[in-house]
Length: 256
Ligand SMILES: [Zn+2]
Ligand SMILES: [Zn+2]
Image (cartoon, rainbow, N blue to C red):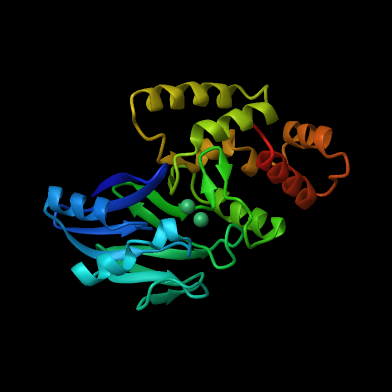
């Protein structure tokens, strides 16, 4: 299997997985980059997996479905281009001979889902849309902090070697914020250096891994003493874990 991040718009990635003949694509916000990749690698598109309804994740779905007849899968409770198979947490999707488990991960949107496969070429694979980014998480447009915290907890509990295919290249700006939250985190400082070198070469910082995110991502570390202390210096009223998480997300929203 080949896993490719197709860059699009300002900072999106449309993830494509293919076996040399057939391909699946995740969250195609436009058709052109997908069609170019299909042609370049001589592939047929068999499946389109959608994580949530935002236009930068669904804008290419109708055209790709029309041109290729690929089967479209998406969250049961969100509006995406019809027709599509409506998925709920716990459902399974078969694509390219891989079985993906659907996870409900509300927070960024109310019906956001993620797709997890336990083994693709020796390691698990996660397509998590705009829920988990490297070093950060999605903005809370529709869900509550408690929902997002639970969603991130579920993702953090996946095996450490899970490859995290997030939908945006936000890593460097996320890591600047993460350093402000946890200036003493050595793994974070090293990871920031690695990611800066990748971006200087024009390469994606993704996929990351769940183990890396557990070590460096403040939104997966909101119960760590150092993170709690930093958050409380900004928001003294944050006491329980949900209010600490909410204050951390709020701090990031205002961080320059
Ligand atoms: Zn989104
Ligand atoms: Zn997005």
